[in-house]
Each structure stands twice: as C-alpha cells, then as structure tokens.
Image 1 (cartoon, helix red, strand yellow):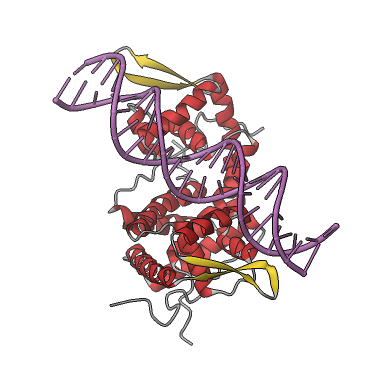
Image 2 (image 1 turned 60 degrees about the horizontal axis):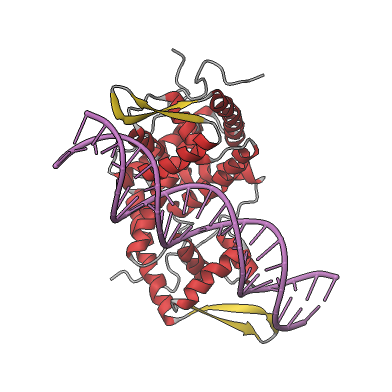
Length: 162
Length: 162
DNA sequence: TATTGTTATACTCTATAACTATA
DNA sequence: TATAGTTATAGAGTATAACAATA
C-alpha cells in the first residue's frame, strides 16, 4: 500500500474554492448581490480605470461579459454610464447613490465572510496562505497575476460598521 | 495612510482558483474533457459509490445536475448505466473502454497540470498549503468537508506514463 | 410512503463574432 | 483604420420542481 499521494493540490484548491465560493455567493445573495457585481463594485471603488476594457481585465472577464453585467447593474440602478466629453468613445461608469449603498451592504457581508474564513487562523498563517496562493497562480500565468485590491475595507474611511 | 489590509483571503482564494481553474479547464479541454467529467470519472475510479446521490455528493453537485452530465457521458460513450438487479431503483454507472481511455488521458493532463502547479514548491509547502485550505473550507462548512480522493494517481497501478 | 433517478425548465456566468460609434 | 463598447447568439454548468419507477 503505497503512501497515499493525498489529493493533488489542484483538486484541494478547486474543492476549497468551490465550497468557500458558494458560501460567499450565499452571503452576497442575501444582500442582493453576486460575485461579479461585487467585483465590479469594488473595482470601481478602489481603483481608477481608464475604460471598460481595463475594468473587465481587473475583474477577469471579457468586455462583452462586462457589458452584460453593467446592463443589469444599470437596469437595477446601481450605476450610470455617460460618455466622456474628451473622448466620446469612452463610457464613464459611475456608482449611483443606490450603488454606493449596495456596495456598503456587500462590503459588510464580504467582511463578515472573511472574518468567518479567518477563524482560528493567525495573521501569520493568513500571510503564508496568501503567499502560497500567489505563487500557485503565478505558476500558471507565467508570473503576471494582478493581485492588488489594496485597501478595500475602507473605501471611504467608512464601511458601515455600526 | 493606514497599512493596506492586502486583499482579503477570500478574494485571493477566489482569484487564484479562477486563474488555476481556467488553466486546468484548458488542459482538460485539450484532451476532450471538462472539470465535471473529470471529477465524475475520478470518483468512479477511486471509490465505490452506492448510488448516484453519493456520486453527486462526492462531486459536489445536485442529483439532477449529475444526471445531466451522465447523459452527456453516456451519449459520448464514456459510461453505461444499468439497473442493479438487487435493487432496480439503483442505476449502476460503469466506465466503458472508451471511458477508461479518456480517464487515462485526463489523468495524464491532470498530473501534468499539478506538476506545473507545484513548480518551485517544497513538499512541505504543499502540505502546509493543503492543510490551510482544508481549514478554510472547514470554516464555512462547519467542519464536515469531504477531502478524500486518496491515491488517484495510480487508479490501476497505471496512469499511462509512456 | 420512501427512495432513486430523470425530465422539464430556467437561471447565471461566460464567451465569440459581428456590429455601431467615435477618433 | 484603430479603438471603445454593444448586440446577438450560444454554450456550459448549475439548480429546483414535478414526475416515474421501484421498493
């Protein structure tokens, strides 16, 4: 009986991500959100994107896929699109007040989710884990993975912690 | 300027899983597979499931979703379904020869993928990573995550390494 | 009635290709 | 022509609800 190889790391990663991702979906859905919408909102709040292509890249989807989500978000009143007067090809995407509100609600859910996730972990372990995951991603991208999203927990110095 | 929180671990996990998962999709697609098909095949090869509900649970999908995939796999000749004579409610799922062949092809791709993933990692780091990921998953499931899949690299003592 | 699985239907996310508008 | 974005269409994966078959 050879030493069991244990599950390959890709399988462990995929299963963990599925489990954790579903819990996150659930948390966001409770607040009327979804992962793509959350990714779009957080990107709009935490970095300046020059155009939708950049936004799509930051979220990790194609331009047409982004349009699809933006249409839904515009319909539900989370964002507005207007043309940039300096270059009318560019559609400037902006959060509405409702979009801001939803962002804060989702941020709260995301923070709670992350807190739950970190339970029992030391800060050092989280750092180690993040580092290992980054290296994993780098191994399949050739090293160019965009792992920023810096200070998202305080997008406005306020995340609604009542 | 407060110390940047870095990305929350859930975000790092999701992004890494997306990146790595897409690379894996790509690797499987090249061999005519997909992740659900691979999960089903590997489960059939590495554990004895009493019925389709168990198989669905092992793969992490609903029964109806499994049926959907099994239909496709039956159509493409990877599996057969026959009724268990002892309990005709149960549909016994079995790999055809073609199914075996595809399994081995996908296993090869999966092994190559995992090797690529592990590049630059020590065995200890992989163990650490797997452990941390398991704990992460446990934090959202209440502890009952099914992380087996033991010796999948040698389903028959042979994985086709030419 | 309970268990096993399938069918019908639909939703979300994603993508590619062709198109419009602007430069 | 090149760039920014949208529309049209489609496909994969998933799910729930209702159903059929068997026990």
